[in-house]
Length: 79
Image 1 (spheres, rainbow, N blue to C red):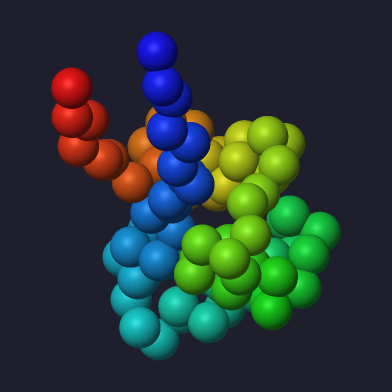
Image 2: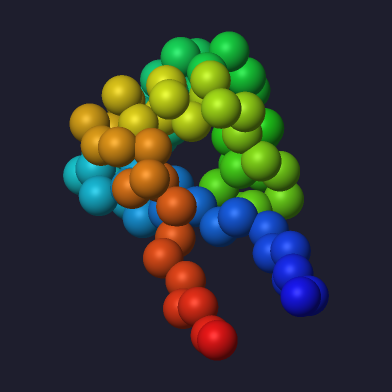
């Protein structure tokens, strides 16, 4: 059996952009502060260049009021 490893993709951009435009940047800064990271590092998570830790995923889920599973981009699975 061959397993293909794929990089996780997150819905962070969509979730952040759901906030009104006038508070988007404040929410982005607030989330970065809650995670204990810079907004630059948060940008890396949003672009998919870096992966958050399990603890950071939990903090993000609480911030957005969703389950950790809801942070992941849904992907098609082929058999």
